[in-house]
Length: 434
Image (cartoon, rainbow, N blue to C red):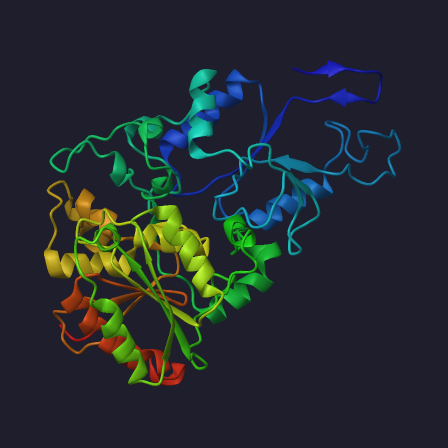
């Protein structure tokens, strides 16, 4: 509602900004239209093709009193500069684009100057849904169909953790998600740009790019003392590796239900390749305990190898813990999806002919869970045997199985890989011919 306050001062309707996208969900556009009418919002919509940077620059340079171009809110002078601009955002601390933001944060250096206001920065996924439902606020209908995080129609699926059963195409609504770490499980990760492409994109971000995400998450900023690299786009450099830590995961070991043989296998394989096994830890199958131990051990060694806590059902905790320790999101890994299809075939009876070129859409709900890996993970093919599974590398952490015969085989392949220089690795880490 507008109301006049004197001749030159106007309190405007709440303004909202929208950038049109050719791959937007129709349901999102419908929600936008209905919300603008319901709350009498003053919406500024930029057409397709207008970059995020250009749109923000336009708004910052023209932030004058409505209908009075060239006159600021606080001054009647036509010579006054535009009024300072702030955007109220829905950013949360565990979002990929949160960076090191606080509740109040200035814009990034490559963007026009404005203030970011993040009132729900410290909210969890559960807080958001409690708030929406408590006050009966409108939300996109896709959330009732099992979607938990919305991108575009090309990179978003319903959350596999909400599927009612493998034999059903029905999903529970988003507010019923129990494992909040799976919020972005429906987002499809497309192959990243090369380093050179990213460098060029970063330099031209302010004028031509629609992506304003930062690369480092808030969770990583909390752990500045951790030995793990804090730049989650930086590749692991193994040219100076000399010490290794082994983190063994398994309640069965701590309870005396089974003997361990992986420690001695690791010690022998590492020593024979000139590497020192500096520390060994045995921890329970607890997400937080494993993540804390990974952070602690990373301060003392160059490389960490994990044993156990992973399995074909993907009900594991190790991969989630690695993501937590590194401050990375879990996301669908396209290469892993292709590998699962190659080794296991498609078990998704609902897959359509249109999804033939999209491996993730061909996966069953169980297989989709198995394709969820920490962002920037790499699959290392250390054997010429195409029947073997690759080793998962997340920064300086290598995730190995706990079954002794599989662990011994993988650690014997991994040890020489660790000591080999980067420029000799490209061919060795490529997928074997099938």
